[in-house]
Length: 82
Image (cartoon, rainbow, N blue to C red):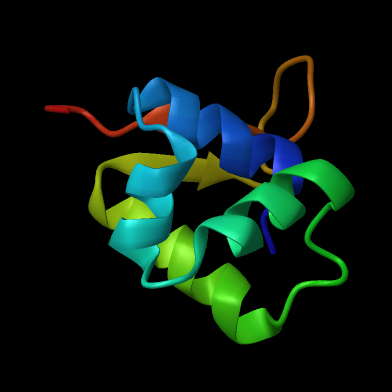
């Protein structure tokens, strides 16, 4: 599962405001605001999946903790061609 920090970073990479992400994911603006403010732990799995799917469809790739062999942890990047 992605983290709230990854979600916000991905949104900013795409130069999207919270409303744009909410519309793309099919969730409410307050849902996005809550996810970014208090984290994803209290969000429904369905809403997290919708948000992650919308960001991935737009060209974001999420890097889970432990999958990168350099310094750092979980991250976000844009796919080639984006």
